[in-house]
Image: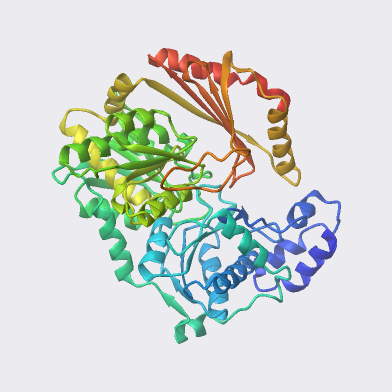
Length: 565
């Protein structure tokens, strides 16, 4: 069908959500209209984790019809793969998340799969836990993570509570029906709840999740710290505050105005805890209350950003800085407490700080590297279990504020990370150190690492093609230097398999270029899998802060990349 014919089909059949009809009727009925083309030039792509896109009417938007179609494909995949005919569903505070969760449950129930739906919004890691706890064949989490308010998403999990593999995503995509208005099975929600084909997840599952998070503590006799916490109008409020208060690790004050779930994110349009702008209200409260820490979790509460008191103000720690503090704390304390496994394993993504290798070496930890995406860390945990080494995993982290200290779930967990961050802060406070002071000691011991992420946005119909051209240009004419630093080694992950050892193998070749430079500097370039962006990771190393910052500034100029834009 032409774009105009697709639009007219939506006008005729997309009647179940009045908001969509209102929106459709305001669109120009002109096939050459950029707005119409962007909404209907393709079906919203089912990527490696599921769907993510702008909310609204159209085949290239997140709405009840794209959610229904994706769930129909998932249901048929579950039948074909002979998976357990049960699926867990969670959702966050985003616009229409609760509606999308119910629509997914309706489709699953109509296809003979019992849907277990959380009765209220819950963190993404709680979904991973429920899949394993209830012994489901799959899981669905309705969230767009840290994207702006106009987005929503649909993440799919396998029976192990890990985000699905690229191969599974391709198989589900192939089963998603083209005729999304007539080829999707549905039941009435309330009738299905009454008949048991749709069930609400019981409080005992939530309690079990919180109990296992609390067991991730390393030291029991740690004094409480004073914390300002913001869930950024998302799903973290209940679980994070309960865990911190029930363990007595923190005296918690929640940021007013950001405590109530609200998918419009009125005080924080871009609810990404990596960004300082997302912490503004929390930092303002900190300046008056003077807590030890500010914690901020993203809308689905799988990532946590922090700021810690320093010299009368507050210093925001990057995901790499917080991650290396946690990694070192876990290694040091488990070694001291004699709870370190015989052959410990930690996992990080390739874009995460190289400083982790030095910490791992000191404590005899085998450090694995995986592609960007926490699901690959989950795959490593699964591989260890399958090889009889379930207790070997001690920590996994990524530079985008994602951390997991135990194998109780298969995704990053901001609830568990918040607990360990507060424990760690209390430990150092006992010794007269703030977290920034503890970090400085690590730099003095291991060397000074500075990291920076640059993002280039490519939107619209031609955005993905421009990103492909960008990468092709770099491959066709690989640079000899960046910012005055000679390229010593180039890794093209698209052409070579780098992710395997005796215990695991990840059969993916991501579209990533890595340039190892003189003076232990590094640049990694990749298209984002969740946003229309090209991401460029800069990493500098030196023997002092000043020199590391100078090296990072040289890399930040990136003159060699300008012709590729």
